[in-house]
Amino acid sequence: MSVDIDTVKRVARLSRIAVDEADAERMTGELNAILGFVEQLNEVNVEGVEPMTSVIPMAMKKRQDGVTDGSKADDIVANAPASEDNFFVVPKVVE
Image (tube, rainbow, N blue to C red; front, side, top):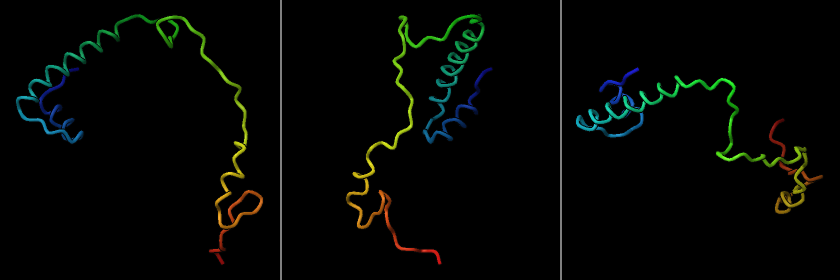
């Protein structure tokens, strides 16, 4: 895949970046070099390679996943003009 000047100008317009003709020429070469590198990466055989979180082996820290109410209901409704059973009380708007 290669990028031409029209594609660079279109991407610049979509990104709301002002690009003049000289910059568009330079960016065309730079983007084609980046895409060439990505194509090289696609050729690498990664069959059987485990995903890594770091360059050194480490265990991920995990926490117990549990559902709680946050123990903050009283703090949340503390400044409400009216509350009942930790819910905000508001005037009825639907008849």
